[in-house]
Image (cartoon, rainbow, N blue to C red):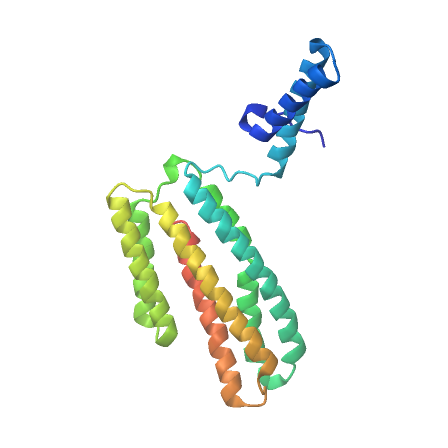
Length: 243
């Protein structure tokens, strides 16, 4: 694949390398300027292209903080997807009895949805690109309405999770009403959910490895952790799904 040319002035290290070559070539090697100068330009240009190639691909967003937050969320989601892949394999090895089929289904479903996160974040990044994608109060109000509905029909840990999400969405609505870019807050909320989901997935993995799988009490605890992880996936979908 050919190396793409880039503006070396955007990369001070590349310019420095070209300058060092120019000075050393003229003063130490006593090269003619007509030889040293093109060499210095070539070194700076190639160096800039190499440095550019090492940079992460731009997401095309108009807000650098938003792009940084989304990139961090994507990295977390990819790590979580890898962890879910491991848990999925372990659950197939450990949950082999007929009476464990329901629990296996819950764990497998949670892992499948977790592995979808990176692709969903890529789709979200595409939707968030450009000024025209600023989240409107109407968009956020629909997300809030869904979160509040889920809160009303949920109980226990799930109810608290939806309550927290609803409170975050209310703050995002205030940002949008003030003319601020609510996308950044939205992605921060999503990134926090990914971290929380990682903690629940780790608990589920640890519990699965150590639990007495013939104990109804311990399998019930595993089931609750799996359902909690699924509930977090629903919360993430509210934030990532276009309204």
